[in-house]
Length: 258
Image (cartoon, rainbow, N blue to C red):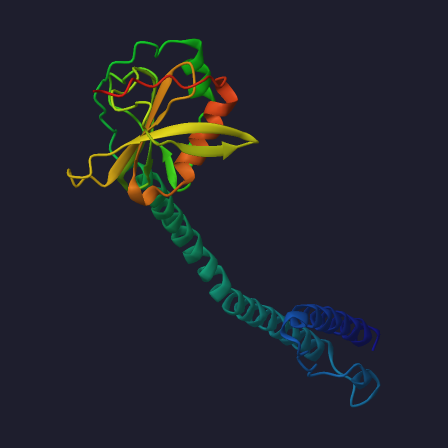
């Protein structure tokens, strides 16, 4: 009987380990598989022979292994959809990221460099023009600084919309415009408590939808050409750069022609 009790203890140990493993694995499934055998059966029923005990222990171990395999399979089945979703989501996210970066890069590449012709600018290299160009903003409203085709005219800066189109162009160091006379009306722009005097030149018969404004109250002449739909912001922003960089001087218009 001592051998039977020893084998029964082995069977109980195997059953206990199997039960504990099953309970631990079933924690993820919120249901605990029922234990087919009760610990109370040790003291009831007929005594078992050593052969019966060995067979029971073998069957219990096999059942425990089958239960573990079943739990592992259930774990894999339950986790596989999440793993598959993650594996699919990562490449898709990378592709979308590449496409978005391509769109952002092409947004600026679609605007071709701007070609500007040269005009006489005898004082373009003056300290006043150098200081003025440094004071200009890189952005005026929705217009951003344009890349210019080489050779770039001296003391010249331009802005365009992201999709291109008519540009805002400013030039410094020009000659006094012939149309600017003592009878010319002036547009006064107030910035930072100061004023900048502008003279507008426009050919009303040409059908051109842009105008050119000349700053005429500084030591050098500055011309600002802009499309009509650009609004007043270019005059305001360029006037602020002029006021910051170049001291104000009395105007010096041409005499009125006879």
